[in-house]
Amino acid sequence: MTTPQHPPFPPHDSRREPDAEDGTGRGDGHHGTDGPGSPGGAGGVGGHGGSSEHGGGHGHSHVHSHGPAAPVSRHLRKVIAAILIPFTAAVLVGLAVLWPGGAPSHERTGVGFDRQTQQATVTKVVELSCQSVNASGGTPTGDTSTAEGSAAVQQATGDCKRATIRVDTGKDKGRTFSEIVQPDQTRQLHEGQEVVVAYEPSAPKDLQYSVTDINRRLPLALLAGIFALAVVVVGRLRGLMALVSLAISFLVLNFFVLPAILQGSNPLVVAVIGSSAIMLIALYLCHGLSARTSVAVLGTLISLLLIGVLGSLFIGWAALTGNTDDNTGLIHGLYPSIDMSGLLLAGVIIGSLGVLDDVTVTQTSAVWELHEANPSMGWRGLYRAGIRIGRDHIASVVNTLVLAYAGAALPLLLLFSIAQSSVGTVANSELVAEEIVRTLVGSIGLVASVPVTTALAALVVSADRPATQAAGAVPGAGAALVRGGRGRRRKR
Image 1 (cartoon, one colour):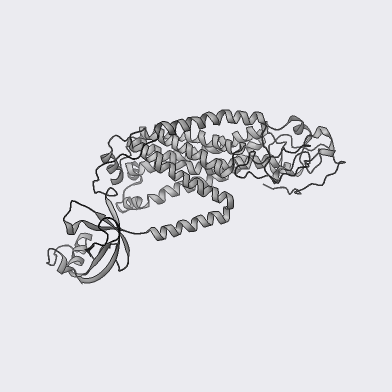
Image 2 (tube, rainbow, N blue to C red):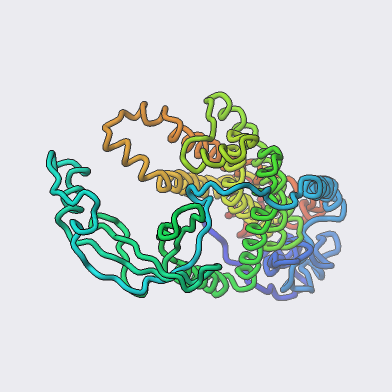
């Protein structure tokens, strides 16, 4: 696809005809950017002299649009508002009705994440013989080729470590305890290391604390800071707005979605309302309150509805319970009223939202820019050009989505490979079937969002074009941008 080069500021010449090859029958909307808070997005029909029937003296706009120009008429803005305002009102009502008072309390089980933890530091590590600390004290016999036999030999003949740990937080701050580290343990402690310890008040005093994990707050915080810096440096104001919307998304998840599900609300309804709120906040905050962003919102909404319908259908048809590992089993044990299959569907919807935003915004922007480069192009031409861009986007994003899920399930897939299970057996297991349904349903919604959003954007931006401009203002080199559009021939 060859992109024509247009001078940024065509010279004003009253002798030029409005159908000249440089396309001065339109305003220079390509200088407008759809910044945050912009009322209009990128307009290509702006200016007070864009109509060809006024003669060549005002064939181009005298107001070179360095700021955003209004892309659509008042009528079309009313049509878009008539759709989005009731939808936004419904989301706000849903938030108000389902807003939880906080996660319901329960008695801690001491299993997994459901236990009290404190911060601690390893103050001393000494080596000693494993035989002196193990209970049996005898040399093991039997098959040492297995993992269990090899571990038993190491524990009997190897060198162990006794770590002294000091509790740094909580009511027992300053208290110390000892823990034996076996030679075959994956987590080896060293002096000065910060750790996380679990507290079990019902255990004997010398066994109340135990090391459960490493304190990773510093490297994670540093990585998050590097990420935020990179986003702001490259994205500038847009990047800053993206970080703000990301923070708001986490707030919606933590203070609405999760507590509402724990309180017994329908997970599907909560996910739809929560994801809709995140979508509205993220898109309008990052891309501005404009018609262009509103079209992206509509495209995302339609795609989310499709994902919800397909997900509900196939999760029920495949009899997926959503209770497939220790964590989901613990949730079901603590809160039996939670619909675990509904929770699975909620995860599919929320997980697909981020990728959908990317696709719908890109497609809407592409159609707007195509119209800006060639305002006389009909909606069919805009759609055909936009869908060609979308096909490239689909190929890369779907592959990204599938590989992201495959990467998350890599240990599980490796386990099946070790067991030498067939592909059919692996795919039929509920653990893998969940990921297959999640991936395919999200990918179908992603693929569908391209033609849906492209068609919406093409219809909106072309319907706003004045008839006189379509008849008289014909761009020249800009016609090479798109094949199949109408009104592209120059007058001879």
